[in-house]
Each structure stands twice: as structure tokens, then as C-alpha cells.
Image 1 (cartoon, rainbow, N blue to C red):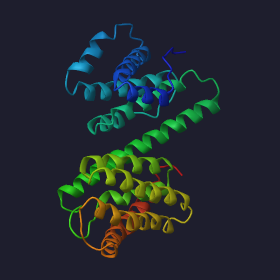
Image 2: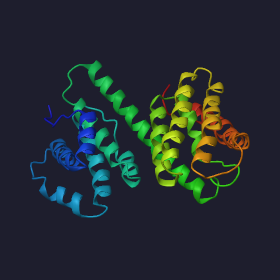
Image 3: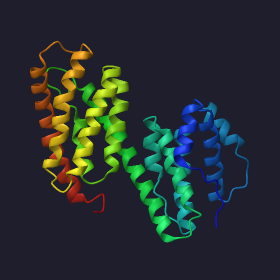
Image 4: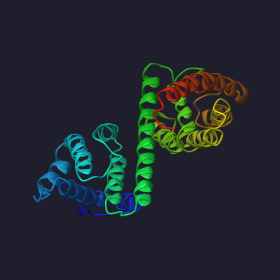
Length: 280
């Protein structure tokens, strides 16, 4: 059996936040040790840690190569891992390194488990975490692209990221993924604190009820349209982004949501259903 450092993921994230990243460095050191254990490498971790801390972009290389090494090492020892080099690379490119750390740690935590049920639950949790992280990353990218091409500006807006509500029909992880993606997008491209809080809340409400209505997939896309139509006009008024009447703002937002969430979301639902990427 491979001996690795086990850590509770939620505790690691919390400690990283309250110590302003100091614990995160120690956590990264433990992951470096674990990757060496997987490869049966007895060398010191000092060189890799110095490169990770002081060399720009080395972390992207490290996560891609070590992600592949961990995946291959798990397979060689009869284990399966939810994380892979491609997912780690994407998370690093979009500044979501702590999610990559959480996924890899969760994989390592599953190694000493002796019972199949425990291993299955751990892999399921890691899979959900991976799916949620990928949805969040794609949400940010689509919001960025919508902003570049002018789709997120003007009287009627068509943010492509709104179509991702459809993913919540297939996976509960998408509820958190869309919510986190919306928070990050509002921080990067939004209208300030009101948008970060209430705009993201509108997204969470919509995604949550989309998942609840997953057995009626086309009805499931209605809650996000309604939550955004009701809440976002107030955000636009309070942030000073628009002086138009609330009823007018509600109407324009409804049109944009109907196109992006209703029509594009329905198309995305059909595409996912046909490819069966969630193995339902």
C-alpha cells in the first residue's frame, strides 16, 4: 500500500484562507511529497517547492506533468483517480489552483480506504468536485468571451455562460459550479459588490431549482430565467448601471435569458443527452 499524507480538504481550504495563503504553501508541499510517493521517488521536495514559489508559470508545468504521473501511478497500483492532467492544466490557467489541490488531495485521501463502498464514495465526491470546477472555469471563459464580443453589453444582453444552467439537469455539481463561476465572473467583469452578492444569488437560486426540476428538463430552464428577470433589474438600478424603469429592465433581461438560457440551454441539454458524458 502507498503511504501518503491525508488531509481533510475542507479544513485545508479554510486554513489556507484564514492564514492568507501560508497554509496553502504547506499543503502544496504535502502534495509534492505525495506525488513523489506515487512515483516511488525518495528525493527531497525542496527544489520543486522553490520552483513552484519563485518561478512564474512553473506551476502550470508542474500540475500538468504531476497530474499525469499521479493518474498513471494510481493505475499501476490498482487505483483509479478522478483528477487528470488536462483538468489540472485548465484549472491552473484560469487561476483555480486551489480547486486542483482539492481534487488531488481527495484522490490521495481515497488510497488507504479498504472498503469498496468508501472508495466509491470518495471517487464520487472527487468526480463532483471535478465537474463543478470545470463548469465554473467554462462559465468564466464564456462570460469573458461574451464581454469581448459585446454580447454582455447593451440594452439586451446575451451572455453565453447562461446556457450552462442546463448542465445542472445532469449533475448537482453544476449548481455549485455555475454559482462559483458567476461569483468569479462578477468579481472580474461585474458591477461591484451588489452584483457579486445579488447577481450571484440569482444564479444560485436559478441553478438550484433547475436541478430540482431535472426530471422535467425543459421546465427546469424556467427558474434561472425568472430569478434573473426578477433580481437583476434591481442590481442594475442600485449599481447605477442603468436608469431605465424596472419593468423595462426586466423585459430586456427576460429576452436575453430566454435566448441564452432557454434556447441555447435547451440545445446544450440535447447535446449532453446525446453524448451521455455524465454516464447517466
